[in-house]
Image 1: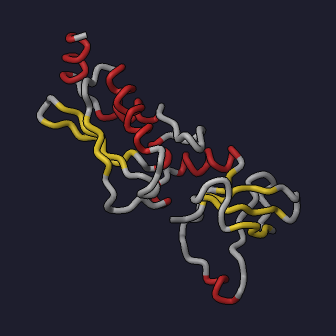
Image 2: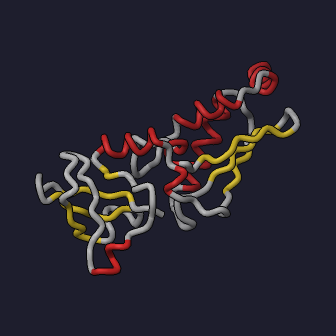
Amino acid sequence: MVELVASALKNFDPAQVWTILEEIKDPEIPVLSIVDLGIAREVKYHGGEQLEIIISPTYSGCPAMYMLEEQIKEALNHRGFIDPIVTTRLSPAWTTDWMTETGRQKLEAYGIAPPEKTTTNKSVLFGGQKKISCPRCKSDNSEQISEFGSTACKALYRCLDCLEPFDYFKCI
């Protein structure tokens, strides 16, 4: 095991660490990794001895963060990075802008409308609702059923063309 650790430290490649982090899935949306979501923010290597991963929760009270920290440590330990440090950073606050384009595509393929590129919704000023494209039939003819869907970060919508309900991952 000592040889494995020495090898991992000696031949440190940040891309390898990011690949390992890609394997760690979000517990609520298992098609997304912590890299897709933008939870994994930074990989640091201190003095050739200590690996540190910086993560940001999707919201400060996220109950999954402890579990994700443990999964990160376990995955890295298994690959020869002994006792990595996982640091949770709350500032700047996580935003849906940090999601990767691949992550947005995975969300849509999974049946969840991805967040829009902007949080502005001026239609609300005039009593209107945000129109979100249905991830199934791609129609923009939708209505919001509830501000909150299966989790606080999602709203529940219904497509008025195919009549299917769907979650929309809200812009934060």
